[in-house]
Image 1 (cartoon, rainbow, N blue to C red):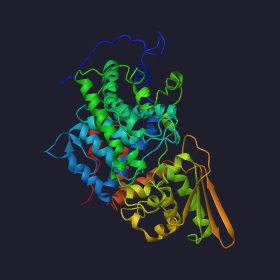
Image 2: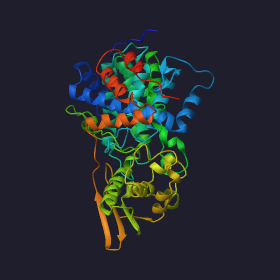
Image 3: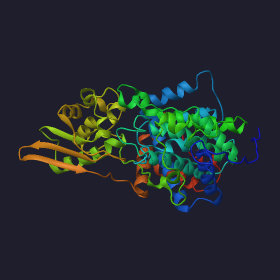
Image 4: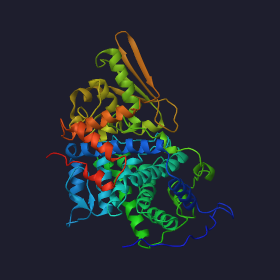
Length: 472
């Protein structure tokens, strides 16, 4: 079916933006489409290739490692669903929206995907699956896919950075990856489908009509679905783009209207338009690849615990006091259940447990932090001695960390306010480890290099064909 074409409608005034202001959704689409038409800088495309490689490597590693991977794929095939959308690492083919769901679930399941700290969201785990889901039927090349991914990431990161969520206030009770991912995934899919401005604005309105992302799956305990929440956004974004392509019209004022996103999801806290529409720079480029497969808010504590373990030369014997801020405190309650997680997802989201795990083993990686980690006796014994004190200042980004242990020579404290980010070679090494974890042994370097080469150009179909099926 040919895409619906429309003439460019004149912008209508926003309800609260002044007589000359166009709706915010249209203004953002116009800004990002202009960047696309001018061509993305090589720096941005190079980063997109790196993050796409990271995302695919993580998805492949997740397939054999986690039961939820097969649970998701099985659920999506109920009733005999079939289509052209490949599921990463397997023989399955699904309709585009379902393929986007499956691949986004795989990309996030290990909690190893890239992160924008101030925005507190994982952009690529939504936008790449959404873009790839429609790439083959759209006969798109990889440069268009990567450009679409980068622009979807930029939209998500601009919205998230404008909210700058902390432990309380607007955005604190939402998985912003999911909430804003409906928009970012929609934009990525729409660009791959080569939709005109009018259709993309409409698609964002249709994405808004699906928005969700309440954070109870993270603040509560016991739910394995916390590991797949970005998948809902990738699926919804693709569906919105396809509906708009077919002619369905969504609300133009979805973001800043009387019942728009900012009012009903974020308590009416609407950021300055100037910040969202600022032309220079790429907010997305502050996104970092994760060094450890756990919740980003736990990373400063992992860093501090690893440094403390190296300093002591062994696990600590005495009491362990972990200082947190209001954001990190939400990953510490209820303390008794955070000390003894019942699922791998809870373990990765628990600051007490992740601190204890790093202190117990002196390393945190796919080999150690696996499906049986929550039964690790050494980590559980240390976690039982962890006490939490909420004494550190809160703010956007990852929290500062301070860990104090009692020793025979007195208390020893280690603080960390930053997290090491892998450089390009570090990402390549991480992908190699993911491939080996997926079951590829001697062939892992060749697979990584082939994927990296296919990201540079050529049809998206060739890149997808280069992704091998996970053994077993």
